[in-house]
Structures are given as structure tokens and as C-alpha cells.
Length: 404
Image (cartoon, rainbow, N blue to C red; front, side):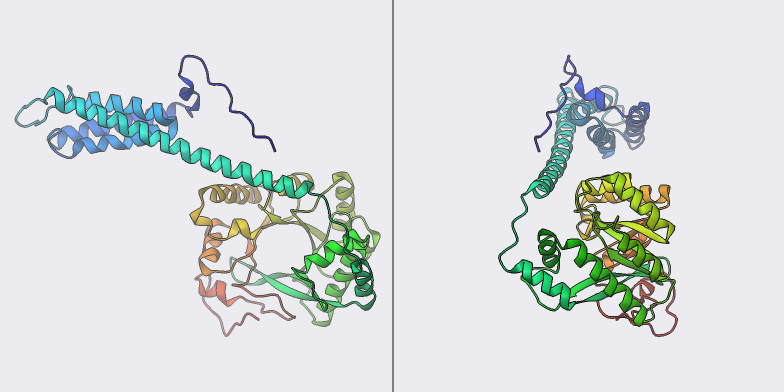
């Protein structure tokens, strides 16, 4: 992806003024300068520690307006704390010229340096985002390798023998720890190097991707029925956009007799959104809901969310883990949380493997969570209440609760 060139700066060297967010920022800096002057005067003059209060206004200007804004505010602070401020208020002792000139230089230098650091950090974040988008584009446009010899026969044999079975990972509400749903995952009896996704990729390349998906979903629905999974618990089924319009999927949803959530991964390419929207209209009438899985792992998920209006957004582990240590991902998470609340969409944090991440997303306001910390994929049944969430202080523990 070619990098976009920055917009040309306005003539006259005053480009930084374009970043002014409004009169509020200027007013706040002015108030801080006035407060700093008053603090310096009331504490006895520049001989004391009062001049340090001017750094608040300088740093604020540097963050909002950059290096030039920080330097200009440092100059104003130096003047206010120079000839207009005695060295000792009580004794009426004025400042020496070299003292306040040195202070002006220090204020200006610190303001410029702080603004430059902020600008460098912003550029680093923008570069990281651009590199991530470039990587996603390269992956999306990479040629699909041909099916290795013999694997197409293996896929057909796999389907004929149903040499796979479902496992289920629980999804718990962050409000009270109750079981909201389970996601069905497929495990194959014949392992290939890599994850189970390898089999689905091989099946797709062999022209059998839809058949394998539908067979895996049928196995999951039947296993849920055999285990008598409560009808109020949703069953999440992974589904590609090409399988959604298949009438066999609609028939499966109708005979399932339970809430079904069809999960489309962020990495899935949707060639015809209108076809998917039409298919989902019929599926929704039969009680199914749509989830965008792995949201936040790349740019495609935002398009899926806008075009398909899913009822559920499942955040990728790349966004949900160690969130507090990354301002960029924190900002993205905050936007998704607000979007979900404004649109009435359920937000599920995936990949929760530590109590700290669980607490983070509970504090942020996510609807539910899923991950090894709450329960590993396994056979049914799973616990109807999650001890990990209850222990975290959402509700007192009531009885013995185990996560299987």
C-alpha cells in the first residue's frame, strides 16, 4: 500500500495553528499561565519553586500545538516569570537580567523538546498502523497455493468418514458470570501441521469448502442436542460468506431449535455484500444472528461491521490482550466500545487468558468474554456460571462453581 504524503503546510510557517482544537485549548493554556504566575508570586517569587508551575501550561501547549506551540508558550512563561516577577516579593528584590534570560531559554527549549517528542510518538504510531495495513493487504492479495497432491483425496475421505468432531468454548457475561453461549470449534482426527484451519483451507482449494463447513456445523448442532445444551444458550458456528446463501444452512438453522450465531471471520473476503445481506435477512427471520469474528485484527472487519450490521462483534486477541500498555489499541478499543453501545451491538472480548485482561474489559464495558482464563474448548456441558468472573468481584460466589 503506497504511503500517503502529508498535506502541504500553509504558507508563512504557521502550519501548527491548524492543529488548534478550538478556543478551549487556548483558554486552558491562558488560565494555567495566570495560575502559575499567581502561584509564583504568592510563594515569594522566583527564588522559590513557584516557576515550576509554568511547566503545566508549556506541556499542554506542546501536546496540543506541537514544538512551536510549546516554544511560544515557554517564551510567554519566561516573560511572565521575568521582568514582571521579582526574585523576592517580600524584600522587593528584582531579578537579575541573566537569571530571567536563562529561564526564558530553558522554558523555550523544554517546550520545543516536549512538542517534538509528542510529534515523534504520533509519527511512530501512524507508521505502525500503516505497516499493519500494508501487511494485511499483502496477506489479502497473496496468491492461494495449489492443493498439494493427495490432499484433495484426503479431504474427500475426511468428509465421507466424518473424521472430525466439535469442541465448545464457553462465552460468559461480564456482568454476572452467567453462560451466554458456546462457540463450536472443529477438531480433526487426522492432524496436519498447523491449526485445524489448514483443513478448511485445503477443502476450499479443493472445491469442498462449503461441504466441510456445513458438515462441521451439523456435527456441532447434533452434539449440542445430545448434550442437552440449554435452549437459552446461543450456539456460535463459524461460517464463510460463501456458505451463508446456501439453502442447506437455512434448513440447519430452522431445525436447530436454538439461538444460532453465525460467525464470519475478519479475514473472510466478502465479494458481494448484497448477496450476504439477502441471505442474512432470511436467516435472521429463522432466529439466527450474525457476528463479525476477529474484529480489530485488520481493516476488513470495519467494512464487515458497517455493511453487514452484525448483532455481535467479537474482538480479536491481538486487541484484547495487554491492552493497557498500548495507547493505539486502547483508543481503537474505546471507539469499538462506544460504537457497540450506540448501535446496541454485543461486544465480546476473545482471547482472555489472564485475570488482568478480564478486569480491563469488564471495566471498559464489554458485554461478554471468551478465552482460556474462562474455559478451554472441550466437550459439553460447560459451567453455567464462571468462577473466574465471580471471583473478580462482579458478584459474590454462590455455591461451588467449576469451569470445565
